[in-house]
Image (cartoon, rainbow, N blue to C red):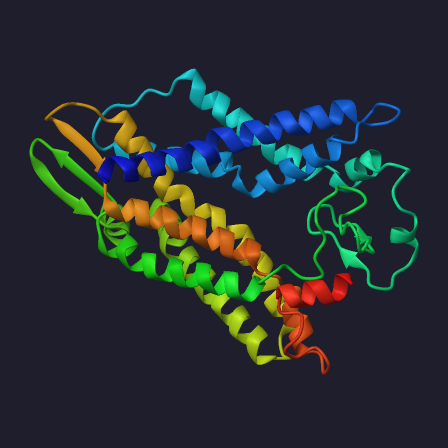
Length: 338
């Protein structure tokens, strides 16, 4: 059981630090090169849509902060020398952040947009639906409700949004208890040491007078998960009760929750690095605990919850004729598509 848990945790870390960033970079480069052709191939739109879905799961910049935290914590135990790979990782992070800020995704979609798309889907606004992948507003065809630009399936609202989000939020809240109760890390030095929880790690940093680092870990590992769970719960309750107040603020809260979710992985990256780098036999041993796996599951579940929630439902529920409708049910999808 322990080996299976360790394998799942390692796979999750490898996916967000290696597979997702690599797939996103290769896919984006391929799309940019082929999009300059006179008639871009049709499959480019699906490739670009896949790279956009990988974007929130590419966590190189979060991993760099985890490396920094691990470097500071190891500095008290051993002497550490930085190799060329660390500087290459910093350069990669800088390039990725620069790429995100300079990348005009709408212009790429316009290049990939083919002229043979159904004209009727663009001229009329009756029954128009916004694509969740590329943002194009079009009217879905009854026989094939797909976006004419990126070919993603169109939904007036995300199917079963409220029910799926509630399930993910409840599961994350249940796992949040063992994530904070059980140790996330055990450091043994010359036979002395004890397991440490997330809050215990923050207390150790405060005791060592590393206040900025303690604030970073507290914010990413304790405050952010609570904010995500509370924020999603508030939005779900407000949607189901048809609350009309603070709609813009609740929409901003949704985008904040969706953005900050990935930064909770800092602690997971730090613990995985400490366990992988420190191997001094009986002198010093560092092992991740059960709490680390539970906390990793909390982060992933809350990220999925933010993706499955549809903020448009808050506005639907607040309208005089929209209370109780368009709550992401399959019946509503069939009614609008017909």
